[in-house]
Length: 71
Image 1 (tube, rainbow, N blue to C red):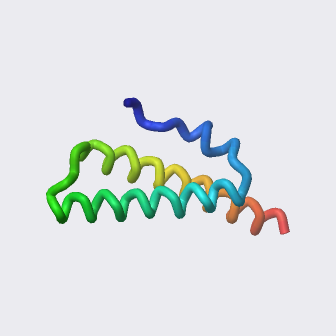
Image 2 (cartoon, rainbow, N blue to C red):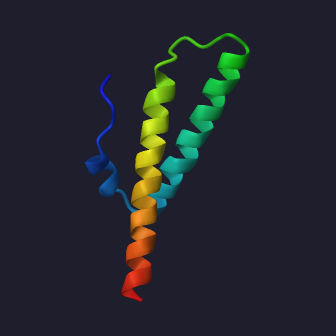
Image 3 (cartoon, one colour):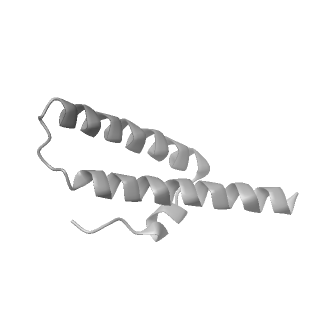
């Protein structure tokens, strides 16, 4: 499984972007919980989810900065 592309994130609406951020944070929590209870099957998912979260948060921040500069 390859890492997700940022172009996919840029196409999302603001609400979808916020929903995705919450979703990824929940998934990361679940992975940490599985790791603590030694039930983690796919440790590579940490890298993918952290990468996805950073993309989502970067695009969100870019939009905030753009909105601030437009006003």
